[in-house]
Amino acid sequence: MSGSSRAHYLPAGLPIPVSDPDGLSAPYWMGLRENRLLVQRCAGCRSWQFGPEWICHNCHSFDLTWTDVEPTGRIYSWERVWHPSHPALKQHGPYLALLVELPHAGGVRMVGNLQGDPRQTVIIGTEVGGVFEHHPESDPSFSLLQWRLKQGADRVDGHSTG
Image (tube, rainbow, N blue to C red):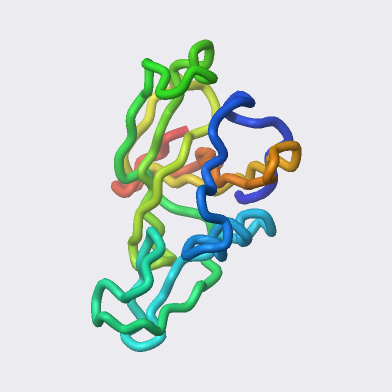
C-alpha cells in the first residue's frame, strides 16, 4: 500500500532533511520525489546497504548502484516520542518513530514515522507500507517516506494486528 499522502504528517516549519541534495544521497531524495524508494546495492557482491555510502560495506567495492525497492517492510523497532525535538513539534506530540526492516532490500533498515493515531498499539514485526509525502511549498522542495500499517497486516508470528 504505497502512494502519495495528501496531508503532511508533521507540521510545517521543520528543517529540510536534505542538507546536500546534489551529493551522495541525491538519488535517494530524487527517488522519493518520483514516488520511488531507492536503496544502494553493490554491483559486485550484490549486498544492500542504507544509508548511502561511497563504498560497499561488504566487499569494499566502489561499484554501488541505486535500485528500486518495494516500499514495504516490517516494524523492527519503534518509539513513541513525547518530547519535541524541534520547536515546530511543540504542539505535535506524541508521534511514532519507526525503524523499518525492508525484506526486498536484504533486510536493511530505515527510520520513518508511523501515520495514524500516535497512541495506537505498535507491535514489532507488523507489516507497513510506504507513503510518499511531498513538500513542494518548501524551498528547496523535498519529499519524505512515511509509513502506514498495511490493511490486514500480520506480525512475524502470523497473528493479525488489525
